Length: 371
Ligand SMILES: *Cc1c(COP(=O)(O)O)cnc(C)c1O
Image 1 (cartoon, rainbow, N blue to C red):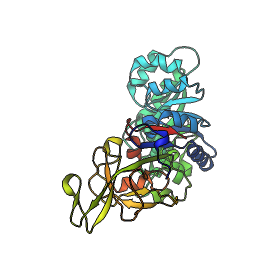
Image 2 (image 1 turned 90 degrees about the vertical axis):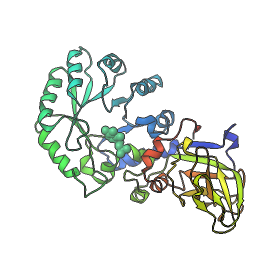
Image 3 (image 1 turned 60 degrees about the vertical axis):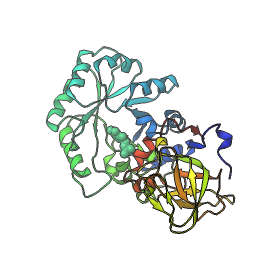
Image 4 (image 1 turned 30 degrees about the vertical axis):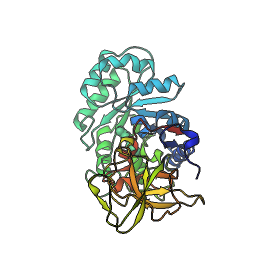
């Protein structure tokens, strides 16, 4: 039981970012998509992991893909010289000078963006454009009918073009539109338009190797979580979780049979029992909807540890666990909320969501250590 104290002067909660896991997962992507270059997707502050750890762990990527120009500025300020793709392109015309200065690659998904780029088609090194086709997801992108014209206009304005589309169902076989249907739409639409393409997200890289393109766009798999939200689906992909969220037990209560725990008294003690109060709540990003039974890993002196279930409603700063399986645990015992033993996807499943949402929702008040 090491405690988190040597790293903290305050509340005992800590998110550790393992850069070795980032490196490992990036290598796995390269093994699965050996022909492709890689846009490491680090939107939403690297899915809640923080840009700093992501840059350290993923520096051998070919490029970073993100949404916010401020994040691109930050990467350039850290001397990142590789490529950077704005996944939703420009939000306003006045961003063009910054995009040029930072040498950003741009997604173009709508008519307004084309007009801005035509108006501002300056001489010099041409910007790389990833022209987005709406091949059936109906979120961003040009319809197949409008796509070719968009391509020709940007080409005429001197830009360097790539094809791009995004899959709605690369993580499941039985939903429409299927990857096959979207691929067919893409191939028909781009017939004869010479350009490389960027297609696959993590799910496509894992399960649709022919639908990745020259530039893969892995996100969630780089963080070691599952595109489906079910950990079992990536158990054989040999990915490593990057974030480990830990805290400590800060109080222990001895309940009598029939006593209730926390707001709403959701849990009733079936017998006399000890419960541990953990310094982690929904204001840290732990899901308030976590059901009784959601696993928390309680470490032990011997280094073995044991899974203890949540009992009672998660509150803002604390949650409560059943310590019947951990008689030696007490104040100061370290627990893992998710990370190396407890998969974030398992916590998410017990809370009616997917690992993506929990990772992205890690609260700014949780200190992060890069390891
Ligand atoms: C977020 C995102 C990705 C990465 O998706 P994952 O499921 O996390 O791999 C890829 N492409 C686009 C356009 C995205 O927005």
